[in-house]
Image (cartoon, rainbow, N blue to C red):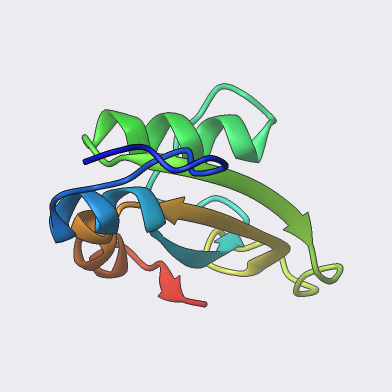
Length: 104
């Protein structure tokens, strides 16, 4: 296989292509009932990213956005208004769906 100008990656295997392409998933963060709780950091991106990596998942990208002010309750299961967005390898999608992430 010869590299083409402007191509960063050429794969011989569909499995390698799935790993690089990945899939975006989202998670509606709660006040304190997320799978990565308890976390000592106030940084949701750091907490979620560390949890995902500790589970052995391949994180390609991660971001946290505030989409609204959250629910007007402070119970642990109430939504915080923050959304964690992760791009992970295709092989990890079903595992993250099982802990509350959703396909984007």
